[in-house]
Image 1 (cartoon, rainbow, N blue to C red):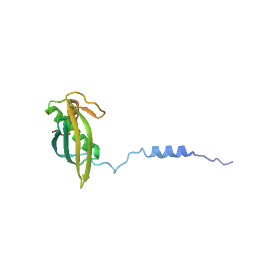
Image 2: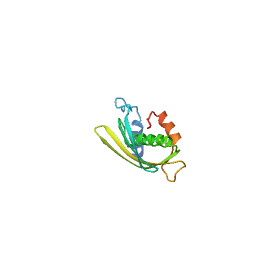
Image 3: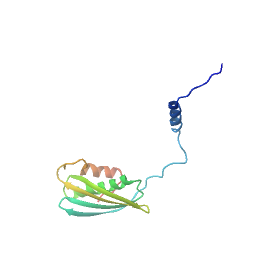
Image 4: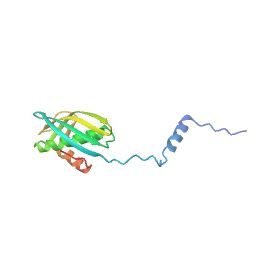
Amino acid sequence: MRNVAIISPFALALAGAVSGCEQQTGDKPAPFKPLYEGVQTRLLDGDLVSFQVKMKGARDNSDVDAYAECAAAQYALIRGYGFARHLRTNTAEEGGTWVGDAVYTISPALPRGLKTIDAEVTVSACDENKIPTV
């Protein structure tokens, strides 16, 4: 009698997943070395502020968003406010340069909404992550 091994599709998938866990050499991602090229701030109306940020070396939109958030948090503190609320950020990349157009409201008390930030906590995190503020 001959021994025949039956391998389930699940076992094959698991074997493939485990073999994919081997450490890859040669395909290391490039180190993250952003170049922050500045922030332009515009007071739109009362507590509504626009931040135009520009940077190179961003990995994706989230790096641009973080730069704008750091600028908004520091701006809120400069104006004597403790909080900000994110309204929107538009980002674009062209030729390796990323630009962000973000709008925030600033306020002395925690504003209503889901995308609120505590300015002091955010500025501290920006400092730890070496993201410049205004």
